[in-house]
Length: 206
Length: 130
Image (cartoon, rainbow over all chains, first blue to last red; front, side):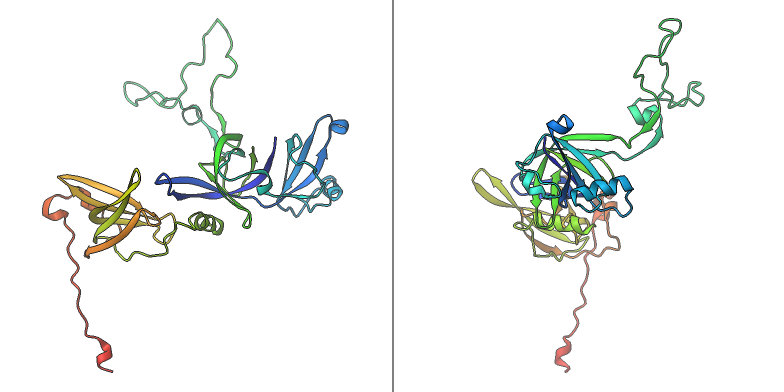
């Protein structure tokens, strides 16, 4: 598995001249990532590469030591990618977007979705609600209804859809096309939308 | 708009982006010459109508809406300002309007659905006096 960490900037539209269509797309900032740790099969039991992205001012002492070991400035976020993605990874080396991806390639994106707080079943699971305010409905328009039987099974089944925290969750999107790569400006243009708020960190995977 | 979004947008359209700016206003009756690709042939179709509004005119995302009545049925078309399929735009008649969006035209019928023409006051050239 190979990948890189980026930051969501926002959305825009571009005009595709080949198909005469206006395409929705997301702009992603992919500044060079730094290799903060190399995990090997002999030492750690599996092969992986840890990448760091962004800058952070105040870092805890244990993390400071971790970055110092790799000779890298403290990063805002760290992600591990399984497998060896570079032929000869060097600790502290910068990884650029163009080394991993190509234009017109389809990639997967992982991000943290926007938090919506504690939501009811209508918003969270798309229940249709009761449907009417009349016919003696009282105040139960958005109630979930029955959640199971009574004396049998005498319990509520697991994974019963109920109200709760919505959003602010790790969400992945597969097969987004890279419309354009701008290595000079460290910008990536992806077709379609990407989970998360603006300026949130996202993981791009091959 | 974020600087990087603007930059990404302009770089994507580098080859196709129109540097030419259109000079029509909302309420004008215009001719949009639309390029249409048919297999190998390319021809130009004219879409004539009233400009109902513009959106984000100075941005690469911007669009404008043109409305015409074609054999009794109203047709609205949205064109991006950067669209490479627009060959040219002619202004046939300038409209006298007080709004940025002419959505009220959709509900009107007959004579009241028309936009009044702007009457230009021709000023004498100042250079002659000097």
